[in-house]
Structures are given as C-alpha cells and as structure tokens.
Image 1: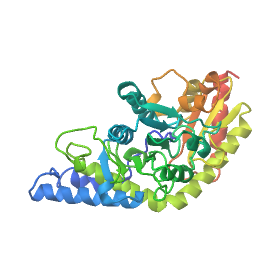
Image 2: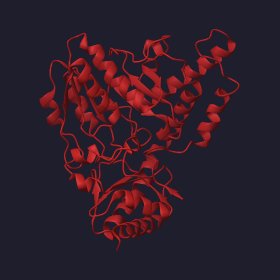
Image 3: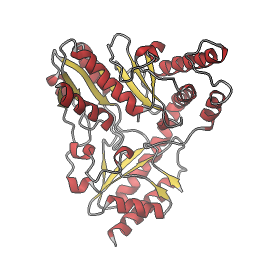
Image 4: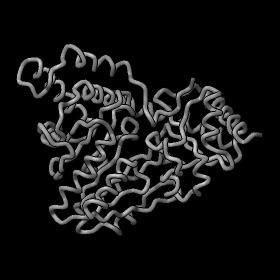
Length: 379
C-alpha cells in the first residue's frame, strides 16, 4: 500500500519514538512538582521548549505547548483578539482559504463578541495579494491570521510581504505553519505568532505548539493551574513536547535536501497526471507550492469514486482536509479560488512524505491515477 496522505498525518519517526519513550516511563513526573522526579520532567520540558523556539526563531518563553495545531490556532486567534478587545480593537482579518481552526474561531468571535471579520480575496491559485491586505488594515485591526501553506492545494503565501505591512501598521500577524513546518524555513517570516502540529512532522498526534511574541497580549483559553506561564493551564505533555522538538529539529536539518528531492519527484508526477488524464487540472499555484503536494480536479468524475479506485490499486490519498471528511459540502478552499462547486467535488489530493520516490516511480504512479480515473468514469 502506498500512503499519499501525509498532509493529514505522517507516521511516527523511529528517532522521535526513541526520544520520547523515557518520558513515558522512567521520567514520568509532573513538571510542576517540586521533587526530583518532577524536576527531571521540568528540565526535559524546558529543553524541548528551547529547541522548538530555536527552529521557529522565537525565545523559549514565547513557546506554548498545546494539544495540536487546532488548539494552537484557536489560542492565537481567540487569545490575541480577546485581549485586544480591551484596547478597543475589534477587527480581524483572515484568509478565506485558512484552515477551519482559524475560520471557526473567527466566526465565534464575530457571533459572541461582535468582532468584525474581513476575509481577504485570493486568486485562482490561492494567493493573497499584499495590496488587498493594505487596503483593509485599520487602526482597530486586532490581528491578521493567514496560512503559510495551504493544507489542500499546497499554495505557499508570500508571508514576508504580508508581514511587512502588518509590522508597519503595528498589527500582530499569526501564521498557521502546520503544513509548512519541516518543509519551509520559519525563522524569518516576520510573524508575531506561529502554530505547528507534531503529527505532520513525524511526532505523535495530540501535541502542537504556538509560538507568540512576549509583547503580544494573549488571553488564555484554558484556566486552572497557570502552567505555560499562565497562557495554557493543564499538566504538560512532556513526552509529546520532547517528541515535537525532536521531529521539528530532524525535519529542519533535512529541509534543504528533502525539499529539492521530493519537489522534483512530485513535479514529475504532476506532469505525468496532466499528460495522462485529459480532464485533469492542477489546483493551487503551479510553482509556489509545498514540494510534496499535488492536488487535482477531474472534470466529470466523482472524487470519492476516484479515491476508492485508487485504494483498490494500492494507493491511499484524500479529497482534501482530513478535518472536513464528514462534510458533503465542496471545499471552502476551492470555492474561494473561484472553482465551480460541482467541479470542486471532483478534487483528489496527493501529499508525499519526506522520502523521495525512485526515478521511474512518478510515471508509474501517474499511470495508476489515470487508470483509476478511467474506472471511475466508467470508460
């Protein structure tokens, strides 16, 4: 079976498993406990925090460990905007193709706190235009929240250009880097807050982090014992934090070679599919995209049927975000890109891991996709 759904989750890396195991057994203490076992756990937690901060380009004290990317995005969007309400800032700017863990909190703030939410437009490739952001920034803008790289179509935003505008306007910028972490450099984005998730990197599910500059007021979502400097109460997942730090460091160290190798084989696969399937169209930006992401729409064919035909042929992929698999509605990402709703229902996403394919594998995989599409079409 060939697994091509790494954007949904990636397998646990052996090095990460080995790094976290001691904190599931021997060093099991509560890091808030003032005894030898607890202090050993606290030291591991502090070390993991410093390692994550180094890769992201933040200070150790800026890193808040969370239960995953969704919580990290919620903490950024709700936490920063709720804190800004006290200063009269009631305007939030988001990307229309952001993950639901950004868009749903934005809607919550609109409904329950009267926050005005502006959704920026994107072009057909899913790119934001800095001029559009410049036009909507206001004195009462509390936050701009965007995705670094889209989880469905792989389009990468020019975050530096957007950050230059928010910095000049003194508006905090939150970047959802759940998909881009490990693939793209994150140190020099110019963001004030960055969210990541462990299970996209080879760490286990259930751990993530939000790095948020210390100068940014943040209202906690979880109240209790005051852990994580009062920004996220609850006993910390020490083993998860160690796993996240290890996976992030490994991915960052391999980034340059992995990006090039996986990007090259994915490009060959894209070219093969476009050549072999007449009705196929690539979604997202042709070049400014994550190296392991290839998402297509297949006119006249049901996407779910294509997925079933692919799995019969030993290929596991998806129709888009794993967080929206129970929804029968077309992808909000594709709709925002101007794709017709019926055509959006034909989407199939292939996301590769960090191991590049053999030289001849891309062509063979494209042939399998073509065969699956023909079977789905009944031809």
